[in-house]
Structure formats: structure tokens, C-alpha cells
Length: 517
Image (cartoon, rainbow, N blue to C red):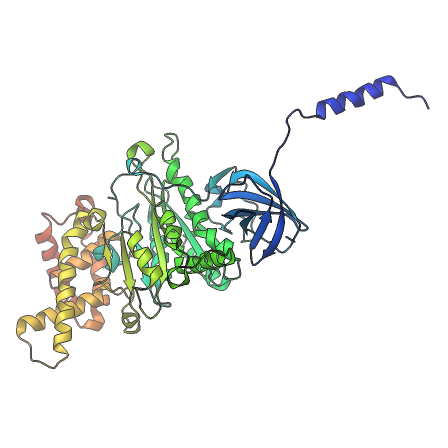
């Protein structure tokens, strides 16, 4: 058989072209032990803490993250489906840190903590990634929190105001409406979508039942909120490592939009709201990881660094300086208490990290006060800086009215006869409690909230039957959207009652007269 020389030459040329001059060097080790989402590896001598490693298993490539560095072995947490990883499998170091897909393609999607779609939709098609665990921006990169993050909930916007860039803890026993008020806040951001004040919302579900997450997504879709929301789900069936990284992944997806504000050509949303539901389940997942990695448990059987677990997540919430684009990331971490014990280990940890807390009380919830916010314990360390002027003017007296009412209510239960002033105060307080009640998933406009508080604090509801307070309020708001629209527009423009007090009092007198008749 005759072989043509040009054929041989072309084969040799092809081989030379395919030959790479760069030599790939990677640190390689072997799995010594594997189970419960944890692998112990021998032979990765140069691997760093937090580095991403690649397991070549029977089911394909599985990623893991180095958590423990010991004298002979390395402890790593496995992400994704780790059932195929076996003893003796090869492990390679990558020299990279854990990253997740980021970008506007994630909006409206339900993803797992690694950014893989869970909603049965098309592939994400993202081109950029963000580091899951980063160092929070320093003081110089930030500015004071001063823009309101409107919840649309009267009790919160008036008495526990939250600003953009703040970390406000939502705390209470299970089934007291913690998730509900966070969902209300997400739904309320719909009014800003498509404006320069637009807010991207991220709901991170940690250790929740899949049916619960599905109902949350359903509520967001029904209220038109999924257009600007990303849902990150590490369900109850997910492994401990997945539940541990879920809040960090959600935060990284939000930081993309916050830092994008630095680009002068960027016109999209630069404000982000992150709801972590809930961090007590993340702490439990981290405890499980730590105990499997043989780390010594400390107080109440949690590892000593569990405080750092939450602080390095929540410190990433900030209002960036103007030089950095002025974007913001607001965090609403949720913590579940047992029997109202806010002095337990994890609740006190997170209370000390955040800028205030909204405390939901089971007794109030059972008594029909919804949202069941205990105004005495709930605080915001940003306060009036995160309120419009009109709200500041009416909210100050509201807190005092409620505080006085609570004291008098306890005194009145003794059956003591009260003087006229005390009776009036009791009537005012009872009406204010009634006024602050609000239906689920029905956020209020800020100006409407101000009008309601104004009418209540000026005593226009003192003689209204308690059961009819909400009807009075509804009719009054209709009155200011109809016959008195011009006056309402003046308030919208001024954002303050200064100089308009008398006009509003006169208008309310006219309305009340017609309402009575």
C-alpha cells in the first residue's frame, strides 16, 4: 500500500498544531471518607481554606468547598448531588472561590443556591458570576442610611421605619406572620418598578418545605411581584452545605445590581432587598456541618464561629457612597424563637448584628392584631432618617398614644373608675390599635398611611365604633382621592403637613359630618 507523503505531512502538521506548550499543574488528592455532604480528602497539600475543589465521581463532576485544613487531611463540604462520590475518587483543586451566576436573567426565576433553575424554565443564559463569600465594603465605601424602604405596613412605616441599606431583624415564634410582612414589603416595591427608585427583591428560603416556597412564589406571581424578584430555594430536603450557602448566594445575586450603579452607563435598578427566611435554620445547618467536620461545639452546642456566620453575611448590607453609585442592599433576616425566648443564643447573636428588630408576639396574633407587632420591643436604630417629613410629624404622637394606652389598659383591668381624661385616652388608644390592623398582602400607599395617622392622632376616630374604624378609614381615603384630591396632591408635593394642617382638619370635619349622616 502506497502512502502519500502529503497525507503524512498534514497529519504531523495537525498534531503539532494541537500540541499545547502550556503545562497544566493541579493539586490532586483522594477521597478518604465521605458521607452526609462531607468528604475527607488526603493529598491536597497546597489547597486553601474556602477554595473550590472538583470531585471526579461516577455520576460526573461534583463541586465542593474546603472547610477544614488538618495535618494529614482536608475536610470539604459537597454541593449538589453527592451520591456518586465514593471513597478513592480523585479530587482536584481549582484555585477558585465559590461563584454563582448573576445578572438580570435571574429576575422572575426560582433557583437553587448554585444558580441552577428549579422552576422548569429555560436555562438562565447568564454570562457573569459573583463570588458567594466576599469581604463587606468598608466604612469609606458607605454613606448614612437616609432613603425609606417602604413596607406598606402602617405599624412598621410609622413606628419602626426601615431605610435602604439597613439590616432589620424580623423575629418571633413560628406562625406569627414573619414571612407575611416580608412578602408585603416585596409586593409594595411594585410601585417603584420601572422608575429610578426600583428595587430588586431576593427571597432566600432556607430549610422550608417545598410546598411553602411554592405558595410564596404563587403569592408573588398573583401580586405581580415576580417580575423583579429572584427566589433562591434550599429546601428542607437539601443537604446542610446547600442550606449553609443559600443566604450568601442570594446576597451575591443582589450585590450584582447594587455595584452596577457604579457604571455611569447603567440605567437599571441599583437598590436591592434581601429576605433571608430564616437564619435560625441556616445556623442549624452550619452546626450540622461543623459537627460532621469534628469542630468542637461551644456554647449551647453551636460552633464558636456561628456569630461570624451571620455577621459576615449581614455586614454586606449597605448604602454605598455616591462615588460607588449610591446603590443599596437592605437585609430582612428572619429568626424563629422558641416560646418567645429572644434571649437565646442565636436570637441574641443576630440582634447584636442588626440595626433594629421587628418583634412579632403570639399573644397579639391570637388576639386578632395583625400584623402582631409588639411596639414596645420593636425598634429601628435608623429611625426618622428613613421617613418622609409627613410621616415623622404624625408618627411621634402615635407611639406616645399607644404607650399611654398600654399602661392605662393594664390599670383599667383592675376595675378602677377612671377620670374623663383617662377614658378619652383609652378610647384614642383602642382606635389607634384598630387603625394599625391591616390585611395580608394589601400594602398601603405612604401618603394614605400619613392621612390615616393624622385623622387618628387629631381625634377624628375617638367616637367611631371600634368595629367601624377600618370602614371609616377606607371611606376617608376615598374622600381624599375623590372630592379632596387637590388637597391630597398638595400633601404629595410637599411631603409635609406644615401649613396644610388647618385645611386637612377642615376637610376631615366636613367628611366626618357627612359620614355620620
